[in-house]
Image 1 (tube, rainbow, N blue to C red):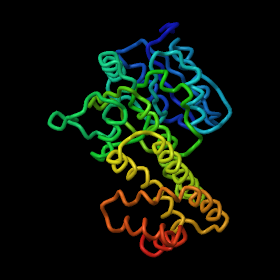
Image 2: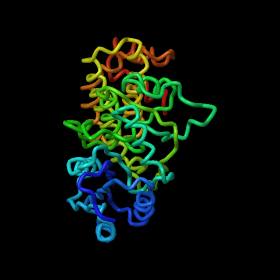
Image 3: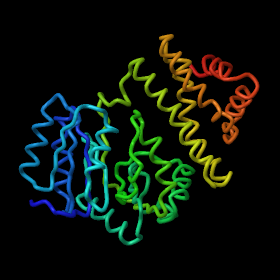
Image 4: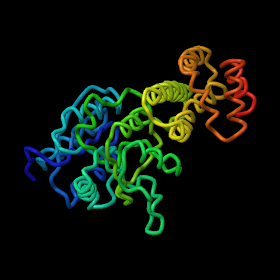
Length: 325
């Protein structure tokens, strides 16, 4: 099929070592009943056959564009796709996932245009059905974010969402393992209108070689470092806004959980003194977030806030060493 000079939607897929999965991913896009799209496959220096596979698809369908780049990680690859996108809307599809509804892209576009939405989110976690519809369908980004977190159905993924292209202006992904944890809350806040479309259109897989599942000390360190950094970044961002204390009570519990996870990794997963020393630096730089542990209802979290206030970070780490093995 010929490429449109101004497609309605740009679909971005970062590709690295996914030669066994990329076919199903691309096939799910080409099976969409909505055809006014471009698919950008960003080959992130993949050492397997993915570069050739991507090029073959581009030769067969003019809507597919391939960008080859040196390996820089999924955040940088996504950013490359975003910077080269020409669609009115952007959606992100990971190379090991696929669209499970042939009307998925079209449905998101329909909702976006109906409500003039900056973001349309679909049922990534499969939590909604006909008897369990979300009470909020379209509202401000911050209200939708608050609702999702409060109902414990929030997921920071940028996948299975449709974004107006302008959302990405001066708003790219940072080079973090969990880049979405830092990017998504800020993006929701900036969005004037977010729509929930309670339909399951996206199927996620979690391969054993996923960076979030690799069980090595170095990977545990990277996740802990990024989570501690992200908690500080996000809470510092919202402290500069005018959101209410009630909203902070809901949102900050989610954000602080990332920092608490980093404390657990420091106390119970790391044995290298060098890695612990490097992690302690970022934990110490962002330790101020622990004062918001008081927003939790549990006495355990109140104790953590009290320890931090009167005895400091090392006392909190000792607490995690003893009580969270």
